[in-house]
Structure formats: structure tokens, C-alpha cells
Length: 164
Image 1 (cartoon, rainbow, N blue to C red):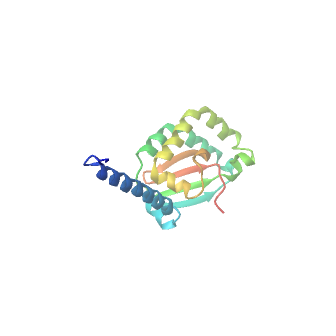
Image 2: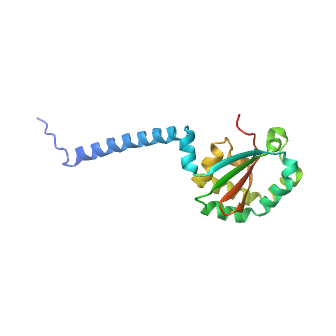
């Protein structure tokens, strides 16, 4: 005859493991659902998101100046949690499929390559700013520069086309 000698807490451990797995599955599904709703995106961002489009050549001086201030932008992105307005300036003719950014912007990007990489990582780590660009189909790799012209406003320059 075999005697079942389970430890007294074994049933509790199995129950907690099962409950934890169920909770993780539900949390993942809820997170995936949340970003498909425009209301959810606006709640996460908490700021008005404006979109503009401009030729890269016409904006080259502004973008180059913003790239020069990337180290300051990194610090601001890291600390930013509340903005009144997020503006995304699309530079569709600066995409790789269109030949890339004009020479003045490209030169600044090469000069500040390590800082631009760090800026993009900080954007990925800032939920508000990341969701602002992600909701407009902008990849972090397409962000050329970030500028804070006022305390409660940011401009994100992107070598991307506006969403259709």
C-alpha cells in the first residue's frame, strides 16, 4: 500500500502558481488591448499630440540645432512626466527610402551618434513620449532630435511619413 505524503503547503503552492500564471495572462491581454484605443493612448500620454509635416531641407537648421542640444534633451526626456503638448514634426523626405536626411542633418547625426542612440533609448524608457510617437507610427530609430522650446512642450523631429 502506498501512502500519499504530500507536504502540508504543497496544495497552496500549486494554487498560487496557477493563480499567478492566470493573472499574468490577463495582464498581458489587457495591456495589448489598451493601446488600440485612442482614448487609452490619450490617457497614457496625457498631452495634446500635434502632427506637422515639413520638408527636411526647410527644417535643416532647426533640426541641426536640436541635434546639437541632444545631451540636454536626454536629461529632459529622462525627467519628463507631464507635458501640455507633444508635437511630432514629420520629415518624410528624410526617410531612408527617400535618400535619408539632407547633408547638414546627416553630418550632425554622425557627429552626435552616441548621444542620439542614448536619446532614443531614453524615449523608449519614457512611457508618455514613447506612446506619443508609437501611436503615430514613429519608430524610435527614426527620431532625429528632440527639442523642448518651453517647459511644458516638446517637438520630436522624425524621419518618417505621417500615418495614413
